[in-house]
Length: 174
Image (cartoon, rainbow, N blue to C red; front, side, top):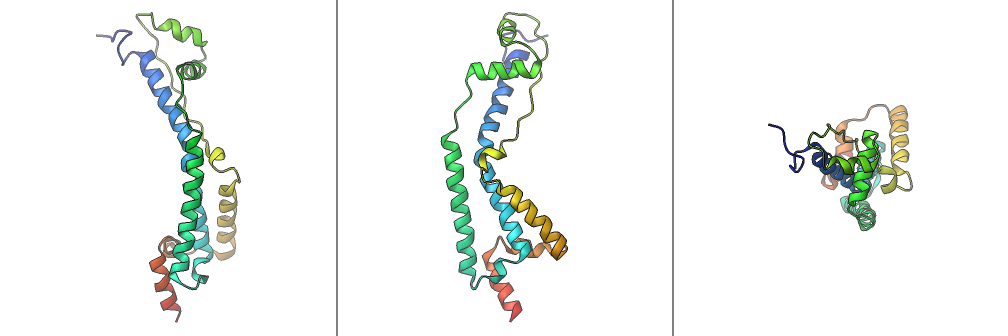
């Protein structure tokens, strides 16, 4: 038994729904990228041992909190620009992904046997959420750190995310 063209499982309806989800993901990704960049920068700071040079664990915690607040502000700014995709945008994207004209997709609503439709992959939108390209700076610093410092213990990078480990590092140095 084949689903009717009015069924939510009909190829056109399924294609429109999945394309809508892809477009929503693409529009939400810029709000997530500041947190990805924050994790990269903290990891690089841990690799280089920058948190070990801070005098107290509270200074370490303050640096992490400031980074989180800045990432949160950038994410909120990106979310303020978010808007749900409209039917025309979804229809045009699905048509583009399948090499069809949007009018052809509209006409497919009345076809009994609809062809299978492809849903395009999401496009990465990290550049919108990282306008200063900090991800490239973090990546370059990580590569330089690996070349200059060699492989560092994973515990050193983990300690960058945990201010309590900072006090343990200070105690082990004394």
